[in-house]
Amino acid sequence: MSVFKRGGYWWIDFYDSNGRRRRKKVSPDKRIATATLRDTQVKITKGEYLGLKEESMTFRAFAEKYWQAVQHTFSEQERDRARRILDLHLNPCFGGDRLSRITRQQIEGYLAARAAEVKAGTVNKEFIRLRHLLNRAVAWGFLKANPAKGVTLMKEPPPRVKYLVPEQVDRLLEACGRHSMGLWAIVTLAMNTGMRQGEILGLTWADVDLQSRTVTLRKTKNNECRIVPLNMEALKALTTITRPSDPFTPVFSGWTRAKCTMSFVRACRQAGIADFRFHDLRHHAASWLTMKGINQRTIEALCGWKDPRTARRYQHLNMDTLHEAVAQLEGPDRESVGVGKEKFDGCVANG
Image (tube, rainbow, N blue to C red; front, side, top):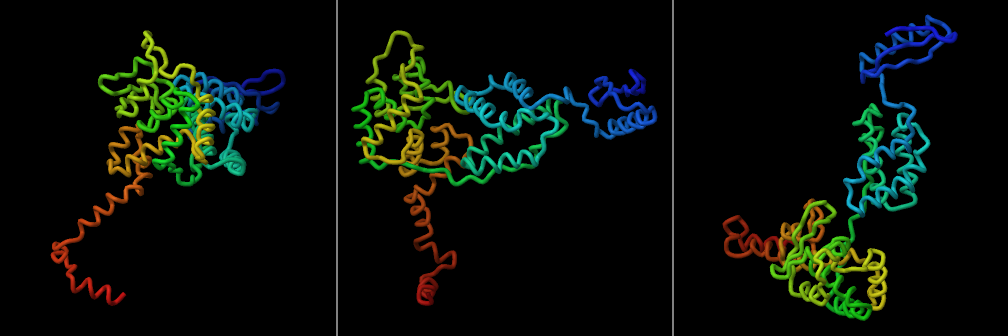
C-alpha cells in the first residue's frame, strides 16, 4: 500500500480483499490521502471493504451476465417467464441503478408497489427471481451481501382446487369433440393422467408405449424424467391419433399452448362450465383420485409433485376415509380406554 502524486492530486495504491490491485484519486492534500489509505487498510483487515468487481456495474448490465449463465438451467416455460420478469419488471425498476447501491428498503418498496397491482403469487415469483440474481452477484464477487436477505415472501391465499362432476365431464368432452378430436384427446389425457399441459404437448411418439400402457415424460417442471401409467380412457385417446413412421414426431403436432388454451376456453363456454382453466384438469385428476381413496403418496408420484403439501391440499375431499378412521374408535374396545356406555350417556345428558 502506498500514496503517490499525479496531476496535482494524491492517489492511494492498494490491494482489495479479493487480491485485486486498486488505485484511487483522493485529494490534493497528502495528509488526507495518507489517512484515507490507513482507513482503507483497516476496513480490508476487518472485512468491511467491499472490494467488488466493477463497482460501477448497473443492475441491467449484471442481469445480462446472470441471464447468459443461468438460462440453460430453465425449462422452456420457465425461461420465458424468467425473461419476462427481467424485461418487464426488474430492469425497469432497478436497471439504471448501480448493483452495489441497491438496498433492502428499495426492494421492499418495489414489492409493496407490485402488491398493489398483482396477486401475491405473482409478486413472490418476481421476488424469487430478484433474490436469485442477487445471490449470484454475491457468489461471483459483485456484491458483498445480498440486500434481499431477510425479506420474506408474501403470504398467498390457499390454492384453488377445482374439479368437475361426472355430468360436467360428459358435457366438456362432448364440446371438445365437436371442436376437434385433437382437443378431445388432449383433454381426455389430462383428465385421466393429471399431466400438465406442457407435458402433454411435449410428448413424441417415442415417449408412448402402448404395450406397457405408459408414457415417458422427458420434459417436466422439475426437470426429472417421469413415467406415467395410462388407463383405458387415456389409451383410447392416444389410439384415435394416427401414428406416423417417425417416432420423434410430436403426438399432438400443430398444437401450441396458445391454441390449446383458447380452444379449451371455447369448449368450456359451450359446455356451460364457468371459471375452469386447463390446469384445473390436473386438480380434477388429483381430486377424483383422492375421493376414490387413493393415498397421498401415490397421488404425489402420479402427478410428479416433490412437495407433499401440494398433494395434501386435496385431503379434505376424502371424507369416506376419514369417517372410516373415526369409526375405528367405536366398538366394545372403547371400555378398555375408559369410555364406557354409562360415561358416554352421562356426557350426552349433561349437554
